[in-house]
Length: 366
Ligand SMILES: NC(=O)c1ccc[n+]([C@@H]2O[C@H](COP(=O)([O-])OP(=O)(O)OC[C@H]3O[C@@H](n4cnc5c(N)ncnc54)[C@H](OP(=O)(O)O)[C@@H]3O)[C@@H](O)[C@H]2O)c1
Image 1 (cartoon, protein in one colour):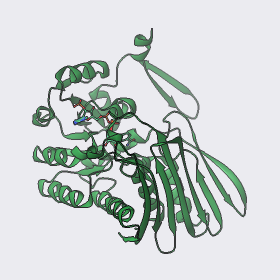
Image 2 (spheres, rainbow, N blue to C red; image 1 turned 120 degrees about the horizontal axis):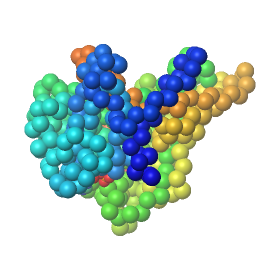
Image 3 (cartoon, rainbow, N blue to C red; image 1 turned 180 degrees about the horizontal axis):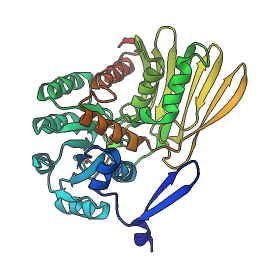
Image 4 (cartoon, rainbow, N blue to C red; image 1 turned 90 degrees about the vertical axis):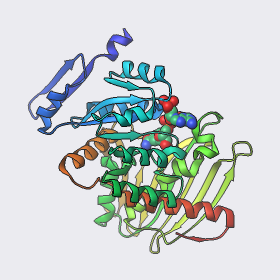
């Protein structure tokens, strides 16, 4: 029963007069997608059968009209084959290299452990593939600078997969702060925590780029820079490391943007919680579910100012679908990627300064 249900693909289209429900038994075909968008869908390949890809990305990417998931690769041939069968992906490969050799593939998604991002960005660029790489783009800003230069030389697009930026709640938050709905922004406070002690999880492996700052602190830094549309001048941080894993498990930081400041705590062995509060001279804005945003539930934002308090309900929206679609559209239209790779470099510079500050105990210039 469950397997049968899984094969049902529900498409709901709402017009002013009617609700049309179309039930199909297979994903939308390439020719249907092309007809609908009047644009050839981009053929994507996925490097690694990552949990993140299967859990959050595959279905929204597959259902996007501009995306065709053509192939998936694993270091293990059976794993790749099983994933391809389960997810209805036409081609599987027993190595990442094999996928990159496939001339049908135009763009790759890289959801590999963080320490492998730079290596596979370079290899994908060598193969002429455009690249959407998971966050953080690299392990440090020197690596980020190097891969950005490399992909430019090879003439391929590169984007760090910060998906939240495409969600209407973050777009709305930035618009409201930009027009002065809460006055001048003075402070952004962010919590992002979870409790995960599995020693085999990449988040708990130091040499794989695990730890709270790289896994989730990068979001706190990214969203503060996004809302303020500015870069912090200096930062100070405090990190507690797991005695066994060596990864940072409880990290707090203060980012000095001059007129405004951002404060955050991220943690990997703490009660799961996430929230962002933006406080301005004339009001406040709270994002109740800022990062792991459900694709099928409306999200809530609270805005307070002298007019009163209001709850905004936005979405539901699938940020991964929009991310893949926007990248694919940019590729087809020959435009720059929606979030330029230099933004990833700027984010990484802040993370580097946070790690330096945790060592020195001092403010560090970004
Ligand atoms: N944007 C988001 O919402 C979001 C959410 C979660 C994670 N992420 C990012 O996505 C990436 C993957 O996270 P994940 O949770 O999906 O990790 P994961 O389940 O461990 O998947 C990583 C994949 O990388 C491949 N791999 C290659 N070399 C490996 C090695 N030496 N050790 C382990 N795996 C190796 C494996 O695929 P094969 O065995 O098939 O080769 C593995 O399945 C990370 O960069 C993470 O930051 C982003």
